[in-house]
Image (cartoon, rainbow over all chains, first blue to last red; front, side):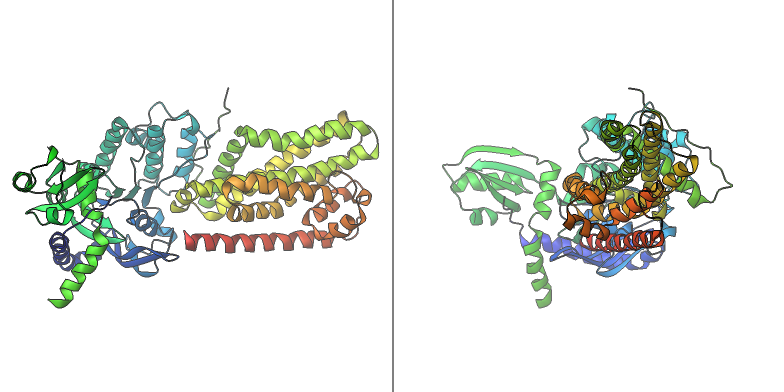
Length: 335
Length: 261
């Protein structure tokens, strides 16, 4: 799939982000967690290319981005599981690799399997023993919705239940900061909504939460602030409403003989891609684009206009960010 | 199926926190290994089955005594290599190790619990073998000998646990069990776990003293007088050096894989 993102939009996003980052600098001192110009390389690939990110006390921050954007790497750095190649990572005022920071952090990582023959109760007891002031078992069970599962082996649980156990493990130490890496991945809708309730409970209890997701819907449901990542950098950040406004627009699908470049030049078009025989156009002002299409192409067929799933619109935003970035940077140098 | 449950101790504030965590971690690890039948049945089952087959065939003869020591060594080596090498390789690949490392769990408690659990398995195997030998095998084992053999396998758990750590960090998780079999079966054969080294081909006899398992076997066999009592210090020293070598290599491998992941 190839998506073309017109330069002005990327530029607009970036300019806004620049304004943001200048206003943000003083807040970094009382931040719960902070990544400052962090670069992380794995061999030749740069997972993070100068990421700046701040988590403020008591907020729920969603790190939103497609797979490979660097979200998990950011979480691993915040947990001290890996070290940055450049830049600075601070968590609760310390280096996250120091043992002291970990007693106030709870983490939910993407764990494929945990020892399956241990009972949920035993897993909780073990994790509680790691912390100086653990949350009461009954409270962990209540907050993570594990009632009735305590005496089950982890291997007997469904996917959603397993995620809830992992969520429970993150709560064992009654942490001030909770990091959730793709907490609802592989969950059905019911389990997902149930976990959203649990995360809202954390926020209500005054915890600072950072969660990663590739669902805009999830970020919208949970977060006070959304940071959109792509290719190891922050693309933009704002409230869920601000982000949603940026990915607004509708999707026009039709079979047309018009060239992609010609379509791109139409007013308010955000992205154009070919999907087999059909062409999919993502545009802010669908009516105007349709009018132009019908005027210019008498053979046009199979016309459909729909609101894109938020995910799709979001992918359109991040999907082709890298080439545009260079275009934008060149633009800045000249101006 | 009835799952034996753990008696989770109430918080005992008198013990230092790290010791409490070590105990708790050991309890969980042991319960988990016991309940993992693929592990517990084969690690305990093979030496016991071998003893029933070959020990009993030499009922009342020196071989029935020899094999108690030999199979006890086999028990501790397999308990450690499979119990740590295979399980930790999986825990690493599946993200569980990362979650544990992200918690304030002391790393030494985690590693110590694994060693202690495998040592406990070695002790169970040895106890079963001594019981079988003195009843069905028709040999006499004094209390001192039983205690000495138990001490040898407990101490022997340390070097082979260290080897288990290296395997866990070195070998892809799906290949771990195969690699362990490939390492441990020849080691068992060439070190006199199954029959005296003196009956092996000459070139193997020459190689044996280079194997850590041979030194372990010499110490265990000396308990029953099948190996010279002199030179024990050398055997222990070799096992000690092997432990350091394995731990060092495991640490380097781990650090490298972390830098790349």
